[in-house]
Length: 562
Image (tube, helix red, strand yellow):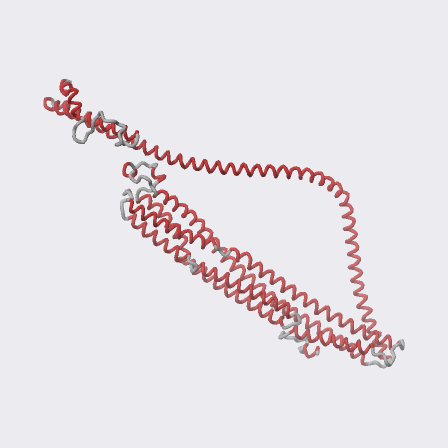
């Protein structure tokens, strides 16, 4: 205590004037400390220097006579000095936490502002919905009354509808029965009339009618057989085309769907990566870079990228995403998909060739105009199919820029990851490195945006439209073939009925002596009928084209018919 007293007030005041210390009575609000917190830290430092000097003098004086007491005071001085060294660190951590809390509060304020705007928009939408609901409720009330009245009326109308339905079913059965009976009667009377006409012809010496009737029966059977063979040939070719189209659609749609799913997954991953790059870019833009040199507080890592370790973690994640996107161009799956596409192209060429062959044969028939239009439609569909396959091939090979952009981005990320891995992880990034990183992130963001835009242009539209167009085209061709087949059978039956009617009418007039020698009506009718049969036969031969026409007995139906 005597040693402490010997220092005196003047000694204490003189200690504050040591080299490296400032005057204790200095103004704490001087411009040296830009904030109140810095002024507080400055005061603590001045007090620490004063008390450190006092303790050092005490230790020196006590150590002269009492070594053990001097050692004890030295330990007290060391601990006291350590306490004062920790105070600025704690205060700086408090300052850092305040900065982080301000940053977080700013973000929360921005999110609250956006949430308030969203809530205002939602409230406006809710008001609109409520007004609409009120209007709909009013209409619903009116509609409910109308529905009650309609249901009441419908209850009485159901019985009427059931009665009408039963009556309609009964009438339909009667008509079907009457039609069937009329067809049978027609056939019976036609056969009877034909037999009677032949008998009358034989009695009156008109024996050529017998031969004419036999020739007509033979013509009817031959024409019907040719029409059946033409229909069967068209049906076989149509079934072949439909089967080839079905196999082609299954394979190409499966391939296209797989590519579309990979494209969508790539777009989603690249979108997440682009947002992460923007966040890291904001984290590199620090207004006060010296804040990193002062502390390693963990709260700063939420808002800023301060060292190679933090940047390397983000780069590794991005490299993994970019590798997944680029793997489709470097892995073995690309070869398998390419083989599937080549197989689909071969199937496409096969069914297109079969369809064109079918249309070309029918384009030479009497309905050439309609089949020519269908052939033009098929040509346009073939071009769309070719563009679809080309787009898939370009996407698989990366010729649309996806491969080059993804590989370039992957290489740049690998180089940067390797550079950051080779250095110490906790070494802070200097301003030059941060500036280079910001430039790289800007370039990478542009590459990611271009990749995302290219991958968004998928083949999903072609996958939905082109098969539907092909199905519609197949249905039109099938309907046209069925219509032509029905028309041939109906025309053949009409000509046969006309021939029988002419023969019966002629013989009836002969028997009743109503036929006059100068009556040329029957000759004109005969020549008109022969002309129609000739035209029908020519059209039938034209429809047959190159189809093999052979009867059951081996004769050529073309020669027999003509």
